Length: 436
Image (cartoon, rainbow, N blue to C red):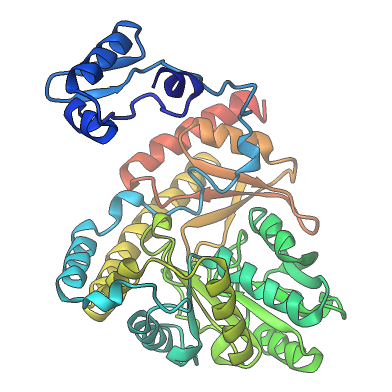
């Protein structure tokens, strides 16, 4: 036991068996085990408290140092607070708890076995109906596949394309776009080609002729917030039909539209050429790791097979809980409440920026959880992003290959009554550190 603690096999805080249980397992008298525990407590390797049992002492054993495991947060940019994050405190805990209780009380034992790698039928049916009703999707339940999120869904589709083509695939991506997705897509087998975005969305005429697929965020482009115009939608669908390419539609921020008409998804226009990817990461919380794709039959089958080969599918109980949340109307009620709240926070941020930082032009505010800010000098936005974070805002700099640089500022996690204070602090930081 001493060697196990010192080697790190028993980590600090690990609870040890009761002396009576360990003695029985080892075929020893209890007195021998008690004496060994007492000796290790005396050496500082264990600690024992009445009613709390015996544990490995804090600070005992071998610990990985900073040299052994370097702290490289830039390697994991998807962790932590991001401008696109929802208000985690608004997660409907009571409704989710009620859904889980309902599932555990009614689900037959057989349903707790390994599920269909494409997702449990109940959730696929509810999502097919929901996407048809809310997003004008044309997606029967058998073509809806459950994944852990949009990132996994897109990666699996790219892998399916690579397997079908027998080579790496050319994937056109919007510029600017989310830098976090690019490494995932490249690892899946894509060679990404940036395509500019203007005030109508992706410039279809600039798509490469050899592209196997294009990734777009038509409902609310990240990061500019542009909604893909009707003309561009028609042009993109026509391009896909002419070239045989696949359109990967990240239904980003589609749930939160504030002062613009609802817009349907591309998938409903061309279900044979478009893969629709969505998740509950914005509507509920990212930590649930539940998402979906609605795809043409061949792609859906490939993704289902890949899930079976990769990890056997998503957690069954969570899938049934989400299905119940949607069926009972709790999901829709939560979204209606959050739309009202996020609109208040957006309005407060836009108003405060106009008052205290009038040289910033705000764009992309009709939907979503962030706005896109451009400065009048067109300089490097890194300093402004750092000043914004110091003021308590969630912000990231954007430097596209095409077009002016900008700044993404999230408003979902900042209560409306704190917005003015944060923007005033930003104005002070900018005056001293950036523009002064």
